[in-house]
Each structure stands twice: as C-alpha cells, then as structure tokens.
Image 1: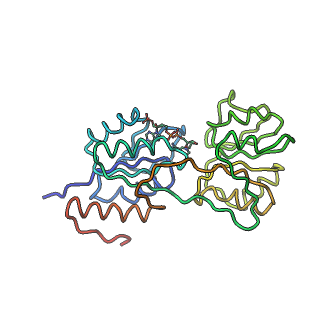
Image 2: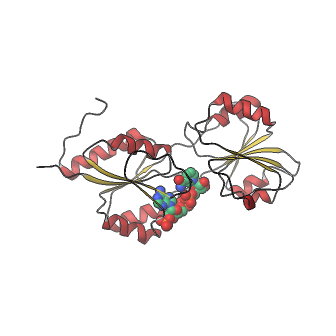
Length: 263
Ligand code: NAP
C-alpha cells in the first residue's frame, strides 16, 4: 500500500525557501508546493510545483489551505514581508494547520562598523542628512518614495528588476543585479562609484552580506533599516531546523519512520 504523502505549502521568495523546496522535492514522503508573491519578473524557481500570486488576504489563504488539504505550512518569506507572515499565522490557526516560521537571523554589527539603525525607510532617507552625498541604495525597488523627497543626494540603486522610471529620485543610476555578491566585488564597486553611505534593510543571510563587509573595509557608514515586528510563532533560523520539524511532523502524522538524510 502506498504511504500517504504529507501535503506541504512553503511560502517563499527567499534563498532558504528555495533551498528547502529543493531538499524536499525528490522526497516521496512530501507533496509540496512553493508559493511566491510574484515580485520579481524572472524568478529563479526550483524544480518543484510552484504557484505565483497572492491568495486574497487571510480568508483567501485559509481557503487555499483547506481546499488543497494542506497539512503543514512553512513561512519562509522575506523578513520584511510582514503582512504575509501575519496572514499565515491567522489562516493556519483558523484551519488548524501546523505552522513553522523559517526566519534567518538578522545581521549584527561588528567592530569597525558604523551603523545608523532606523525603524523604517522614511527615517533612513532622513538619516542621510542635508549635505549632498553619493548613496548606495540596496532596499529593493518598491520603497524609493522617501528618497525622492531628498533630491540633494546622488543615488546608485541596485535591485533585481529595474524600478519604474517614475519611482526614481531625480539623480539616480540603476544597477540591476541578483545576488549573491562577493565581498571583494562589493568593495570594488563601492570604491569605483565613490559611494559615501549605504542604505540597506537588515535582511540577514550570506548572499547579500558582502556589502556590509565592503562598507566596513572602506569606512563607509551604513543606514540599517530594522526589521518589522513579526508575529511570534515556532521558528527556526535555517533549512536544517525546518527539515527536522517536518520529520517530526511526518512521524506524528503518519507514524512514519524518519528517513536518514544525506545518504
Ligand atoms: P507582504 O507585504 O508581506 O505581502 C503583501 C501581499 O503579497 C500578501 O498579503 C500576499 O497577498 C502577497 N504575498 C506575499 N508573499 C507571498 C507568497 N510567498 N505567496 C503568495 N502571496 C504572497 O510582502 P511583499 O509585498 O512581497 O514585500 C514586502 C517587503 O518584503 C518589501 O520590503 C520587499 O522588498 C521585501 N521582499 C519580499 C520578497 C518576496 O519574495 N515577496 C523578496 C525580497 C524582499 P494576498 O494578501 O493576496 O495573499
């Protein structure tokens, strides 16, 4: 008799979500779907079933979980995607689906760093000051509004997709690129561009940490936008913890014997 497969939904958009999906994709004990918001034009998708686009709020997500008979939900969304994380908690509670947060740790400042920590993007723009500066903006393409209101600066904006022209500050140069970025490449880029200050969200993770190492090396101050408040849920910082949580769930749900991993 074929063993029932655990129906799993991963809310993605991060390296960790894709890594988890890749790790579980070939595992016959899981029937998995990866969900993306659809924010990037050409996402790099793992070879697993994917769906793209919003669910229609808390009710929409709860309906999806029930209709698809989802048995486990992993919220591996970006640490700044607070709305979908809130929706995940409320929808999962409503239809009683076990939920795990996969939340990478925030970056911590080190000796030699000069961080100016701020609560949001408006405060980040204000922290640049009145004197004109050459600013490297690594904040994505959707929250440029506050920087348009500080037109005295010259901006270099790096994002996966180019921002809409109307969203750009007056003096802006756009670099489209997708991480990971190496420390040395970041340092060379900042030096070549004459960057005087960096603005970034505290996204955490290794793929885009190089800019912080480069800033430290070059003595460039960093305006660091703190993470938004996320709901308290059972959470792990990385893929290994998520795999353990799923093994445990599987053992309890189906009485299955945990498989040996890495063989
Ligand atoms: P959000 O504000 O938390 O979510 C807004 C809406 O997008 C949600 O209510 C949901 O729509 C939909 N959504 C978000 N993630 C989804 C997923 N994995 N699958 C299906 N629908 C999803 O998140 P955001 O607008 O994507 O981004 C907010 C912040 O996160 C920004 O600072 C952005 O730069 C950063 N960020 C996001 C991603 C990403 O992949 N989403 C990646 C990098 C950075 P419904 O209510 O209709 O369900």
